[in-house]
Amino acid sequence: MAFNCCLLSSSHYAAIVLIHYRVFLLQTRWSSLGLPFKPSMAANGCHASAGPLEGLKERLVWCAQDTAYSDASLASDSFGQALLERGVAPATLRQWLQENPVVSAPGGIGPDKVFDLTEGMDSANVLGLAPKFSTAE
Image (cartoon, rainbow, N blue to C red; front, side, top):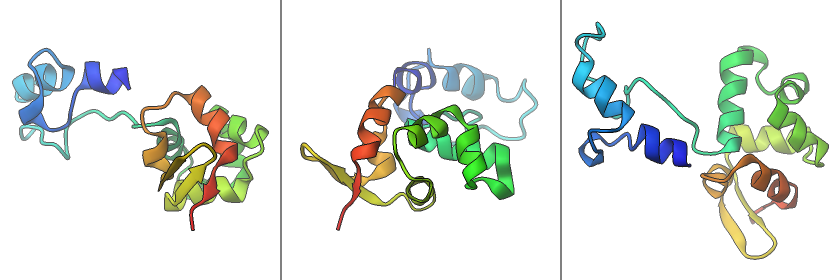
C-alpha cells in the first residue's frame, strides 16, 4: 500500500504532487523519453497491483499466458503455492482469479469482491485470511 501511495501516487494526475514518480518522470519528461503522447490515467507507464491476489493474477497472466490458471502455474508462483499449502483448493483459487467473486470471512469480514477485500493487505495477512473465505450468497 505504501508503495502505491507514496512512490507511485494516484493514477489520477490532477490529485498528485510533483514529487511522485508518475509526475516527475512521465508528466514532465514524457517528450524527452520519446513517448508519442503525454501519459494519461489509463496509459501511465507504471503499474503496481492493489493487493496480493491481484498481483498473483497479473503475474500468472503475464508469465504463463495460455496456461495461466493451470494447477502447475498456480503452484509455480510462490504466493500461489503458499495459498495452496494453506488449503485453498486450486479450483477455488482459479475462481477468485478469473471471476473476482464476492466472498466473506468469519468476524464480519466482507462481503466484498475478493480483490477489493484484499486490496492493500500484505501477503501474510491474505495467507491467514484466504483459507477462511466463503463465497457470499
